[in-house]
Amino acid sequence: MDAKQRLRERLAKPGPLLVAGAHNGMTAKLVEEAGFDAVWASGFEISAAHCVPDANILTMAEQLGAASWMVKAVDIPIIADCDNGYGNAINVIHMVKSYESEGISAVCLEDNVFPKRCSFYAGVKRELASAEEHAGKVKACLDTRKSDDFLIIARTEALIAGWGMEEALMRGRAYADAGADFVLVHSKSEQADEVLGFAEQWDRDTPLVCVPTIYKTTTATTLYEGGYKIIIYANHGLRSGIKAQREALSTIVKEQHCSSVDHLVVPKTDVYDLIGVPQMKSDEKNFMPTGGDRVGAIILAAGASPELGELTQDKPKAMLDVKGKPVLGHQVDALNAAGVKDISVVVGYKKEAVDLTNLKTYSADESQGEAASLMQAASELDRRTLVLYGDILFDQEVVERLLQAEGDVVLVVDRSNLEGRPKRDLVHTADTKADKGERFLKGTRIDTLERIGQDIDGANGEWIGMLMLSKKGAQGLRELYADLGDGALHQAESLDKAALTDLLQALVDKGLTVNTIDTFKGWMEIDTFEDYQRAWAQLK
Ligand code: SPV
Ligand code: MG
Image 1 (cartoon, rainbow, N blue to C red):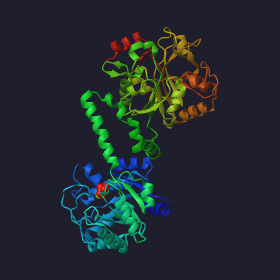
Image 2: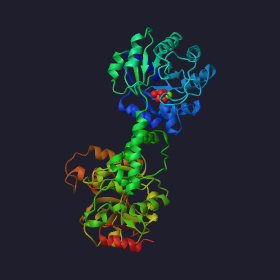
Image 3: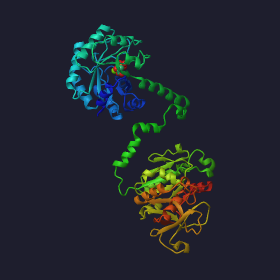
Image 4: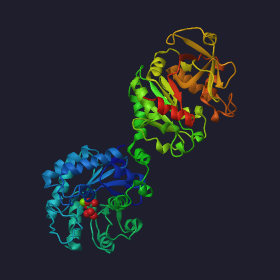
């Protein structure tokens, strides 16, 4: 069932049809979100949105362009205000063809002459076409429409022009008898008595439409009970928008910083949801080539870093500035230079400070462990993926070598320095050449992980906080995580608090092969203030 058939069906049910004005896709979306039955593609609003009077200054194509965006934005029907049909009956024929083929559900045609004047502008010259001419336009609509579900609303401006009730009734009858599906009677009286009086004397079956802009205290129920089926709130979205924008913009000028309007604006994510960014993400996944070679990266940057004190008071460690760029920026540069462009970051602590563009973000709770954090971005684990901590700096060459490594799960392990600080992620691998001080070329050796964790006994290397998962490895890791209960996991008290090392040890315990490649320096971790100073000193 298309929108115009749904409109027909809805109109067959008892109760008033509530409609609100819009001037583009977004305002139509807000009308739909608020719960209205249909959108009024208002000539008043669309003209005002272009900052011109509602006086046939915009062309039919411009008005239709705005209405078409509304069709694309919402599921509810669009009732288009088509003024006087933009000319005579010949123009009306073209208008009906154009509007019906664009997916509009109904058009409204008023008996103003061309060019018109908005019904409410005081002191302007107002002239109506003859009833005969307007009835001819209505007939042209009926003759042109392809579907009987494409509704024709004929509107009389007789009361607006001050031509009296008899004239209004005569015109309404002429348009109903010409075959209009609805008759709209417009009034600028401050009381609803005028439109209610019209309805009382209405002697045709054709249902009525009203626009209670001036008789604004009368409820929809009263109007419905008085004989009106469609009630149009024609311009309240536009007018409330102007008020809200005025307040926010003038506040910024006055206060000179935009946080002064935080309470007046919606979060950007609200905008994203309205315009369909979540849908775009899933479409990307479903319809764009993942490409066997396309590698993603997930950077884990959700945790707080109290050990860095004031430095991380208002930002996560990944956003610490090192020579004019945050750690995360340096990471992105190195990844991009190695050909990895599709980068996601899992944020948590002070996530609003992570404002790098070109990154997809996922949110975790800062109290969660790295494993749970990674799983927030589980939907990215559908291809070959690099996973890394948000607090390491590394040479591009480390990434390049990892990308060349084969294996489903491959960790980069530093063999150069086993002495040092506590709380490091240490590993023990199967091949003990490193323990014995034997020589080998770093690029050629693939080893197998046996144990991993903080400060394990007999370690022969340190994991640098970067690993690569093949598509199969990524899937294996997701499945393993889903299968694990919420009990303790190795060095973690619960799955929710588990570090990546706990998850990797679980993989090994399950009998899956986890490989390692070696590096000898070429990276650094920022854990302490001394590390941070070292990063400044060493980074070129
Ligand atoms: C419009 O919204 O453009 C209308 C209704 O035609 S009114 O402005 O009340 O004339
Ligand atoms: Mg109008």
